[in-house]
Image 1 (cartoon, helix red, strand yellow):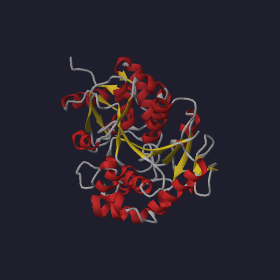
Image 2 (cartoon, helix red, strand yellow):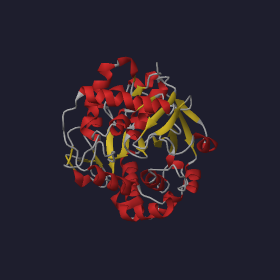
Image 3 (cartoon, helix red, strand yellow):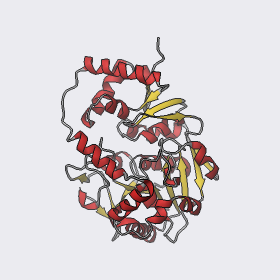
Length: 364
């Protein structure tokens, strides 16, 4: 038997899909996870999603779909977490290539359905921004989710829309999402997280890190992203809810607008018109501002002093936890420093490591 899970926004959604597969369906069979190669600039300094042509070593699964094995490599300067995920998780990762718009993704899905004859198809989004109308002021990254939603709604097969960790992406308040929830499908536990815990040690997804942390019982307020968004860590954090697919489409203006798109450029134009911005534009601006990261040696004494200052400021804002990605950006370090910074902080204060988050200590 084969299952298909579509990771709505790529990135951490693919990791959450692997956790969902084991938790809900068991270990006998592994799902095919269809996902974008669309990582934050911390991993991939090239704005936007990667296409098949940006990799070497992909394996053709169907005429329209390629898988990303552990031996695949992104072509420099691009980067991708997918080959390492394929090396560390027992799933097949298939690539969503959105460069032919929602129509292209629809063809890829239809190809997979014909080839796999899956016993189930889930569309999984961590956080819930797939349910955005498009005009929410807190909405930051609507395009990827809207395209996958648009494609899934055009496939002639039953697809279940699941939202895990409502509100944990920091884009939509949980109160706006709660009325849309149907069946509670699962509540993740620490046992579920153990299956993906090695991946969480290096993967930069903040939403999935918070999903895992709440499943382990962490509660409080987590400060994330370069803007320092405050995300509540509550009992709703580890939950997975089913949402009516048609209701999500009726709500999501961008998904409806992009259903007939045949290029990513066209989809991005709709995103600017409806949402007032495109996340790829934001990535372009940020990449130009940051420039190419250079590998330099950290000075531990200086960095620890800066980290202590950051923690004091975050504490004053009410934060109880943060992510290593956020600390890296808050200290104005570049992507090459994240792992080194993480090891330095954990070695200094191992009791503050609330895996995979960093706990901000109480003053005094």
